[in-house]
Length: 147
Image 1 (cartoon, rainbow, N blue to C red):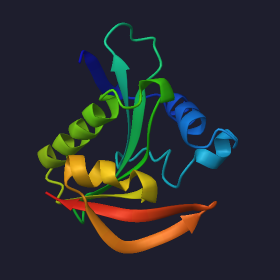
Image 2 (cartoon, rainbow, N blue to C red; image 1 turned 90 degrees about the vertical axis):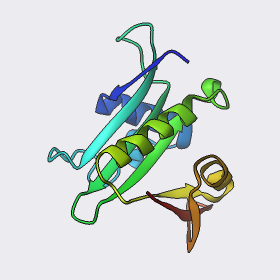
Image 3 (cartoon, rainbow, N blue to C red; image 1 turned 120 degrees about the horizontal axis):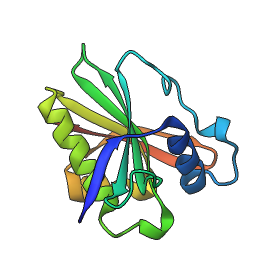
Image 4 (tube, rainbow, N blue to C red; image 1 turned 180 degrees about the horizontal axis):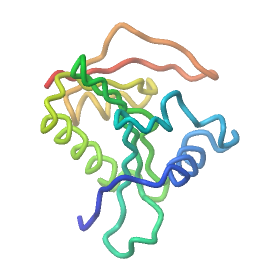
């Protein structure tokens, strides 16, 4: 797979989040707390096909670091529908896990849609917690992995 993973334009992040995760909502709905944090604790990554820097990302993820606790939450992980199940999301999350290890992060966690949790558990050894909730009619579960 010939891809580039790099920090991503915030507007591209919002656009892909909305299109894939909440197509019926507006852009403001897909913004999350600390999205625009400039202190270095928030990082937006995009995976691009290695063709042109001008292209839009295929897959995106937002990282929220808590350096004091050595934890990192990832949120709003999305891959363009036509590129799903082709390894792009797997490539991006593998990069994120390696990034966490390199930066001495001890725990990675996320709020996963319940129906998507097998992806994290089976491919990346995340553990299910007993923390669940429902938002907009969708069931979520918190997953974690200790490094």
